[in-house]
Length: 429
Image (tube, rainbow, N blue to C red):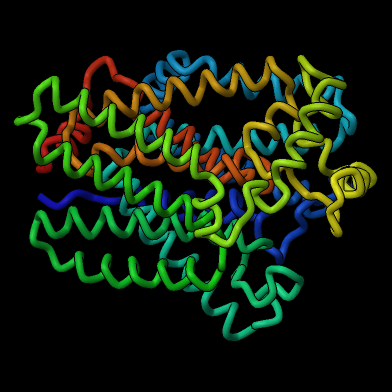
């Protein structure tokens, strides 16, 4: 029996709303820093839309009698609630109370919707959902580039004529294109194994995402893409040969990884020159040093308030002048560092605990299923980690990656007993 992608006819609207809203501030048609001091401005209209989406999800949970299961999953994921609560409480010491309140409420509602998706959907379904949503975003980006080239391309140096599509920055497009690319690859490989025609569609959009990534000229996206391909290749090989592997095989594999890491560290100049980048990562290292040495220590333990510091224009300009950038700094270009700025060491440790729990559960989920679809939650967590090393994708300019992390966390949380739907997904019936 073919697996249903959507569990409810209303879920299409919920998913569409959630994906648009979680990417909204990353789109150049919307303000990167919407002013929450305006009563019915874009910021609070966004909150209203998130609230309606969360309300729709709550209604479906109630209708399908899934509230008890949902509450059990919430209790098992209490560190997630602790992190969201910390973001809400940070309004009391924030540099900008109103901004932190807006960003924290946005985080709360997005998390609520993501937990709903993680409760109802498994990895095979999420793979299909992300494939089609990624396809739509890629088509929109390509259309923007050719129909509105002045909008879809960057015209400032050194990014001149780099594609950015509907996004505010080429690196954001590069990161999303890398995710869409690897999702298409996974879908294509799974379809080939099952001898389905969907492999042709997956192959076409796999190539299309390569084209988009190439013309974005995003070194960040390129590095993420390579890392994701290595991950999928290793997972696919392990799935097919794991029954033949012995302990010494794993020891050799670990040795190869260690040797490769040491070589990369010793040849960092050569590695970055391949991407036409300096070892300073286009000035990111200077920015990180400045933030870690001069800004983070000012509010080391609790941070400057969730989402507040980069909305202060004087701070953005001063940071650029301090490190010698010709344009204002907009983000820390590292997701972990932004969390440290917002919520301090306490917030970063809490956030890291959520990521660790999601990663460990995803690993166990993959080992239990031994399929490429079963490895998809772990692939998502790997993408979230790698993608945030040289760009900020943790609730800074968007909530999409955070949305995926929360969905994975709930999706891989062990149930007391599997539902009929889950058994069908696992067995492929």
